[in-house]
Image (cartoon, rainbow, N blue to C red):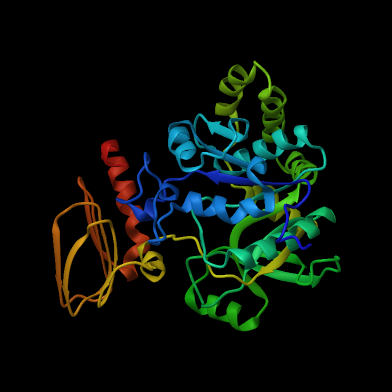
Length: 373
């Protein structure tokens, strides 16, 4: 029986369900972030799709979700199978190191042999079976003692993603594509990205990490000892009556840093980080331009449309329309347009400028209009 036919022993998935997705404003908001939306027309939220991909590898009892206290009810509505003991609530956002590190520490106390895998709640992966096969490969590499990431085989010279440069080949049973990671590269310009893709030595960085919990925590202790100490203090109290008091006293003091910087990059520098090839369709739905490519639902000519009951008329127009209102939206002779219509905010831009939506959110914050966030 293969790994795809049964759960993987001692494997536990962590789903960090945080972040607002500011480049998808005004659709994605603080109270309804993008992981709580159906952004592809599949009929499921991104969070539910993430659970469905992972569940065959873990079963219902081996998935932990880390989310904000404000999203607890919505998450449990989406995931009724999620055990209360596997819900980790953040009092305030502290980035991925704290979220993933705390989950790993809790799970390690429950099972010293646990291998954990972190998978974002808001990514789109259309080939779930192939995804699970790659995760199974990454778990084998993790069991060998490496912190492991899944690098996505690039299909274009994308400038919206970070990249991973592969190093020497690793020989690990059950992991034919494993390599050491040479280094991480921040989002490049188009010419540089083109060179990366043509070389065949680079993957997109999808932010998926798989490791034995003890190995991940040891790396965190070496790189960020203060953060590690705080997380271990919370984990020790987690399954006791002292949990709330310890969390309230400790969580606000934790360092806010991405796991890429606290664990992945330092591990790569020490030859402790491996990568396996992710040859499945993947997108992080980072902006409305990405969304336009992913939508499988309604279309009017070259116009992709998202929204139940959306009313759109289009003539010689292309792009994407997202509607949460009953207003009629008419487009004539516009190319690659983005229109997002919500009850209290309207966004109009182009696919080329989709990454700049975050600047609008920053301006709204500076204006103190938190009601629009």
